Amino acid sequence: MTKIRSIASMKNSSFFAIALFSILFLGSCAGIQYMTVETREPAQVTLPSSVKSILIVNNVLQQPDNIGHNIKRLGKEQTDRIKVSADSIAIFYTEALSQFLGEEEYFNTVKYYQKPLRTDEDFWQESPIVPEIMNKLRTTTGTDAIISLDKLVLQTDWSEFFRQEGYNYAGMTGKIHSVIRVYLPSMEGKIPVVQFTDSMKWEGYDIRDGRAYADLVIPSQEKAMKQLAVFAAEKLTKVFSPHWENQNRWYYTQMSSTMREGEIFAKGNQWFNAIEKWKESYEKERNKLNQAKAAHNIALGYEMLDDMNKAYEWATTAADLFQQSTTDSSLERRRSALFKKEIERRKNTANKLNMQIN
Image 1 (cartoon, rainbow, N blue to C red):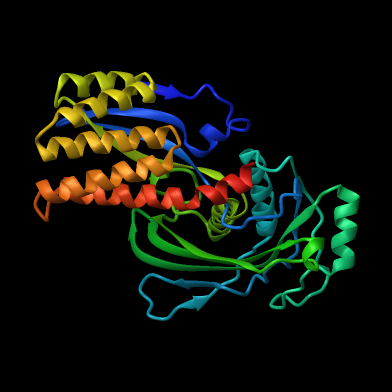
Image 2 (tube, helix red, strand yellow):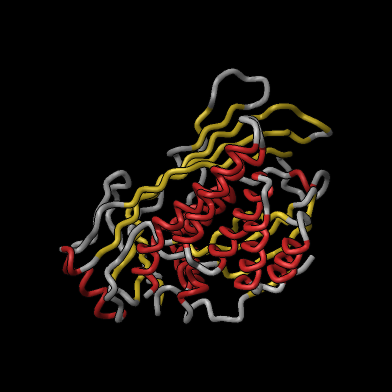
């Protein structure tokens, strides 16, 4: 296993910021070398370039204990409503969002406002931040915009399945719904609402004594809600900040001496040289299947060099050649089509990413 990392700074080099930050070669099988790469993906929401610092705030009320939690006990048909405390869940959410956004190093400053903003008692009613409060918060904290958690509703559904050695084995589904707003003075205080809804599932023994089956323990409803909050915060980070995603890539090996030379250059992160060798192999080949493999390698090389237009051209050539030289059910054909689609996606989002990071 060989691990190769770029020597350029992720923050200061648009080349590697758009292309690939690291490569993990995973070994070869049947003439294919697999690897895992990290690609820089754009934020879903593009904030104005003037927004260099943000403030994360908690603008929700704590969910009442008697809302959102159900349990179906062993041997019973009906589901009972139970009380579960959501104390500090909104704090977990906003603190985690602040931490994750800071770790992306996209904004110059990410600050967290520790005091909850809501003081009323109407849990179900959203209360967006009024411009006067928004401007006061920005001024006192020296930030350009505010990301606010304006709604948070949690639900847990617990079912007991069987009992073993004195412990119940149970399953639980947790659901989270949240509303996030970004407040900007240039847009009368806010941009369109970002809503996030998702769920998580757990199974295990209902054990609270730290003893038997310790590796198969289902969390309490309180702990499950905290996990949901951190999970949601991690997902929302991708909405507001360019981020890194792990993806799988591969290239073909062993067809000829020039293909093998290209592989050596690729493992050394010398993609210009690898492309030249693979082009040489492509030109010499008369077998369409082998040409398709060489064309795929060339496309990958150009992706690694952040030339998405050439990468797409060669990915299209590879897909066409696989179409001509393989059967409809061919794995190579399907895999090539997926790669072409991924390169097209990255080509189409390149301008958005460039606008965000430059």
